[in-house]
Image (cartoon, rainbow, N blue to C red; front, side, top):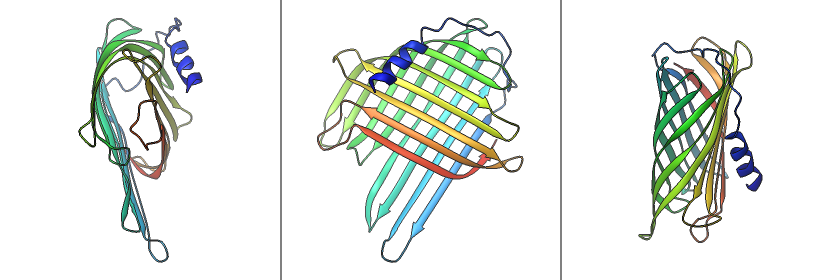
Amino acid sequence: MNSTKIYVLSLCSVLASNPAIAADLDDIWHGNSTIAFSKSNGNTNSSILSTNVDLSKANAIDKWSVYLASTYGKSQGVTNNDKARGGVRYDHNLSVNTFSFGLGELERDSIAKLTLRSTLGTGLGHHVIQDSDTTFDVLAGWAYTRSNFQGGVIKNTAELLTGEESSHKLSETVQFKQKLSLYTNLRASGQYRGIFDSSLVVTLTKNVGLSLGWHYKYNTDVQPGVKRSDTMLLTGLNYRF
């Protein structure tokens, strides 16, 4: 994760700009939702349900984004997957290439002993690339996070928020999106958490497609017995709005 941290901080120092106008500035909600379910019976009894939603609405002045990812699974009657993360972000363009943002996020993960994590953040961003096929933004700001763990443990953290995100129209039927966020603890040296989300969508019809999503989390400050890294791979049917 040290290389990831350097990568994010390097991205936030980019000064290049592209004044081209982005697509989908019609002030209508656009995005994708994916659902996947699997179940097996016999020698192994298991089931897992995963969902992912990524929606946004934008015009020339501001943009709203809503996102949600969750998974729940059981194996041999024991819950081995139970987590969800979602949030809302508002962007307001201050100039052609600069924007301010505010966000709120909620997360839970019973397997990692996390009852609820709530985050509020704000800062500034830069549109590095913004055209009909590719968008690329970098951002930096501050966040405040409250984490409630099983056993009554509560941690309040002030964080430096840095990140980047991009979308790429690879062809008329294939789109790739990715987002990397890093929250660095301002009160405890060397403590941070990182979140990476990516999705590849292949359109089959106007509204239906196949989706492959990869979500990765890393946290240096975890409860005893909990691993620092967590990965989720999601494949399934996708509905495009």
